Image (cartoon, rainbow, N blue to C red; front, side, top):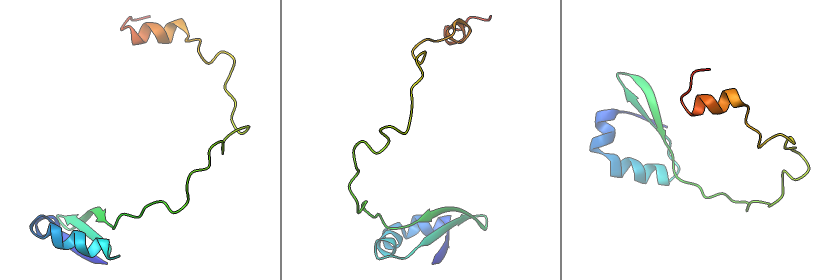
Length: 79
């Protein structure tokens, strides 16, 4: 893991990106406090499985019925 201040990160961004792409973790600090972490991109290894949540969630019968007080708030009316 490498720690860099934000000025160094801006000045050497391409080098830091190269390090991150090779597995190095870069912590970027501002005024001595960590504010960001630069890591290499990793593509998801497993494809998504369609229907994973099937049977695990339930949508209420009144899901599409918005209470009037909430609808009025969206219209900017004070009720």
